[in-house]
Image 1 (cartoon, rainbow, N blue to C red):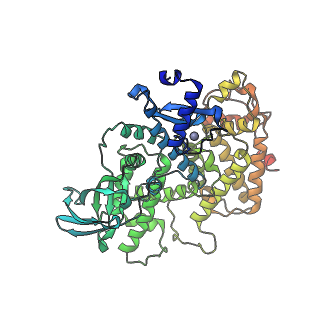
Image 2 (cartoon, helix red, strand yellow):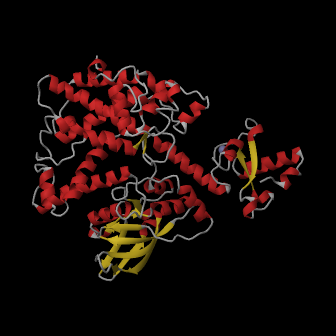
Image 3 (spheres, rainbow, N blue to C red):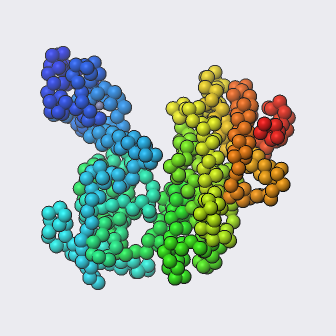
Length: 534
Ligand SMILES: [Zn+2]
């Protein structure tokens, strides 16, 4: 909002105000906290209200701050203190992007100087007593211990300094999403927190970190705003398996939290590893024993066979998706709402994982032929990963431009907008119904190799059989030839075949006959796999 006060200042008075603010702010921009040089930035300095006029801020020097004009223009909140906090969060996000991950509560705790102490305590049947000695506060505090009537879980409530809080990324693998900015604004407007974060401790040894596993967004927003202590409900020695299951159900069957599918896979994977441990302890096996099969697990956990089967597949899917060397990741939209990435995670599930992950439980031991490098699940995981990387290199890296994104590309083409051909090709080849069809052909290329040589047909265990180099070469040639087809970059097809969402059968017909089901010629001839691997 424009300032009457600033409007009335003469140039030298304005200069004097700038120089006073510059000194008060130690020479730094109020928003990005980087240096403002009064000479270099002379023409790109803004004076703005810290508290916006529309929420009652004063039009007076006490409410003015200095910022780079660009920072002020791109700020994410009109209140400058909030804008600065969100800017810090963005910096953290960019820093962690280099590690291929997003911030979680643990990162924010660390940034705020928290998460570095364990709490010493004494537990009696009805009370827990603790002190904050690490912070120089030795006063003893006692709070009642309650027991949950139905589950029997014991817990207490306490307000604990952030130094004692830790993020539990096992139970809660989610990172902090962009909606954090709304929560920061909410708390900044002094709205109270309605639900307390949930955490757990281990009572053994009388010393434990407070593992926060739920409510991390609310906790993070308050910590970003400078909260040094938070109220927490702390479970004592809960069964972690039950907590993970509860948290998974909250996100899946109970729909309390909108979990992304990929997060469900991650949790399923954790549950798989927990079930393996439980199986070992319940059957008296050694801690590193892997000489039993997926089938043994399914048989052991009676009444849960459907779940166990899903956990096993989740472990494979999650292993591929979250592998740090996965180059296709950068082109997958995990939230399902973005306009930057060409592939949706749902497409990945319906194509790569549904075609190439063997869907039945294995009868062979989990460590079967692991030392020879021929363990079926490991081979499967590595080969799907290798295929994804090959596809990323051929179609996406340095070709698909996330800044251009995917938003309304076809209708922009129809209005005459031009796109780089590499970008357009990557975009069109990524449509779910199209990937669904050409990726099946990739599978066929691999399978054909074995059949032609008179070897056993791997059928739906295809990716569990190690591919010789020739198979990889055939796949590469097939994809390169597929990419060379003119239709991907033919802008005349924008309002016909690429105009709307077609079904899988539409593209099957196009690839098999060269024509659409309506008879329109799209390819000069049907796809010929034998020709395409030459
Ligand atoms: Zn700045």
